[in-house]
Image (cartoon, rainbow, N blue to C red; front, side, top):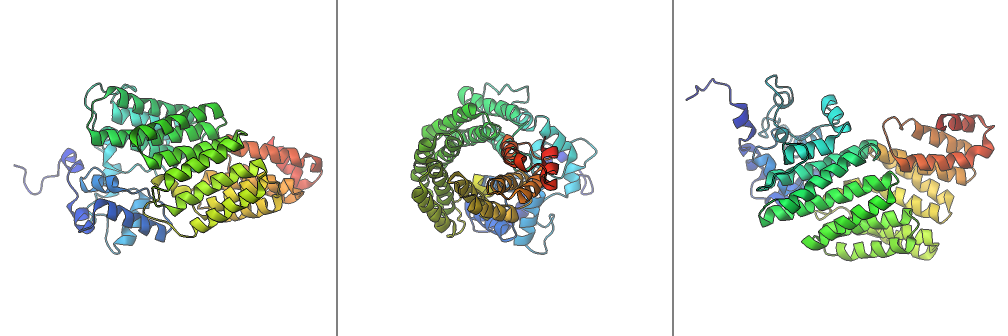
Length: 439
């Protein structure tokens, strides 16, 4: 037997239950406690995708140290308590141990703080993470039993794809994410699993299909995006997942609008709203009303668009809910204003579009670098369309400053539109500088 002074075995420590955290949860269910974590995050302006599964992983000791966002939330919930008081290991013990890297499941990945992990992620992260955790080999899932570890791996791939997209945009990530998706569906097709694992795999694979579809959408691969969204919708229908169905229809509506199919955009948005009514989430219904408004704007249906925008504002004003899907962390006042700007722009009301886009830029959390670039590009394009060339050039130049960190075909296309509209004003100093940089 080891003496009391012996160092603990790292392998045992990694799986030791977190009794302190379990005690803090008290009589609340994991779902209730996860909802409390999300509410606390909103109070301090953080955005975390906490659910009962995450709470279970913490309490089981699978997450030995939370990422910095969760740490800030937990310290807000339990003032004066250290990570140790909450039952977590010191960050340096998890991330800086000399005896070798910790198992991947022992901490919440922190790409924004770790240069090494950032490089891994940028060079194939979602696929590498998914295949490493799921199979232990080069993308070949096991032929035997599939369990909660594989479900967690798929969920991690979804989360990190979204994290990367928030900061850097879709370009350069699409192929790797597609590999992760193929791995997830091979698990469903070839593995053996319980019903509870099947539910988790279907939900995770469906959300992963939506994420890959969005990467295709944002990088201009509209045909691929439509296929991935259809795959997500089929997965939702097979598994009876109303939240996934609403998400798939939501993104299908957005894609249809961008692809010049406004009637389909309206129908998809309405189908999404029908699915979402089972979820009791006003914020989700608000987003879906905005999707409908976007389709109606492209159709030139101003009155229908304005009604949908008004409904979106009213629903948004009801505030967040514990029923809000995790994938909606991006949807706040800034996104509401940004989508309003898109609708006004499609209606040809460039003054109102510019006002909404400017509001979106000012409201956006710095965490969402890609969205700041998108709203700024929309602002620039609408200022140019509204015959305000100097302001448009200035806004466009601010977006160009972000392009080293953001890779998005959508943003570049908007800047191209701005440049086209500004060329008649090329003798103006600000415009000339913008056009030079944009080229």
